[in-house]
Length: 36
Image (spheres, rainbow, N blue to C red):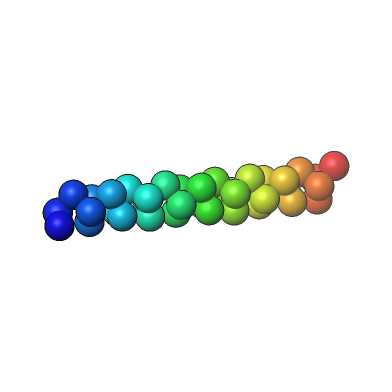
């Protein structure tokens, strides 16, 4: 049971990190568009 939970947490963390990376990239991209 414990291994399953740690796997789920790892997958969730990976997804969250990817979402944050996308959001961060989008905001940087928008700022670049506004500045240029």
